[in-house]
Length: 212
Image (cartoon, rainbow, N blue to C red; front, side, top):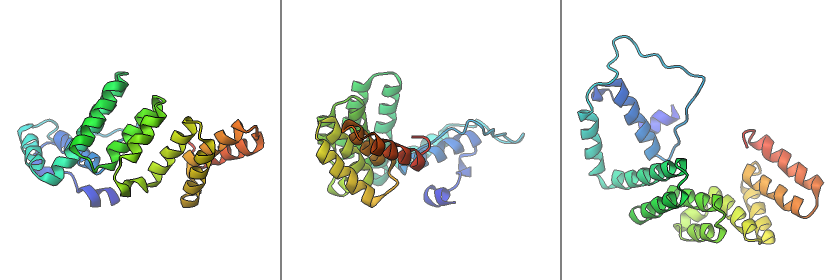
């Protein structure tokens, strides 16, 4: 109900179950939410459902939405994120990073692009570039806990362990169950040879996020 309250219900005016689902997923992504595949779920279409239908209504709706300035920014954001993900799937990280930087040019206030860019640069071990990307974010976005978590790993990657630990402490004061901060504290403790503390932090990180 929280999701439908934010993005709305399926649009039956599209006269197609297929495009109604596609439309719903796009609206969800525009709100910065991820789409996940539930591998153990089967969706059965009713025998009288219009599965495919015409694309014209779908295209017409999204052209009209793109003409609105607020949706235009969101669409630029979504396109940048999807293009980057596609390039990463093709093992083309440089093109992914360029797509994100182009996205920032078109939507400079959208936090999601900066975060994805910083994560991408971190994955490429370009720690200073990742930190520079974070520094270029809008001021309000820099206060986001996800941003602060990424700063921790930038500092650690640059060998600034004391600053990384201070940043991780700050994150844990905001959220004691931050798996990223707990994991980083474990890494820093291990680097100091404190295996007991390291194991404790790693265990807490797993408890906070079993999928970590």
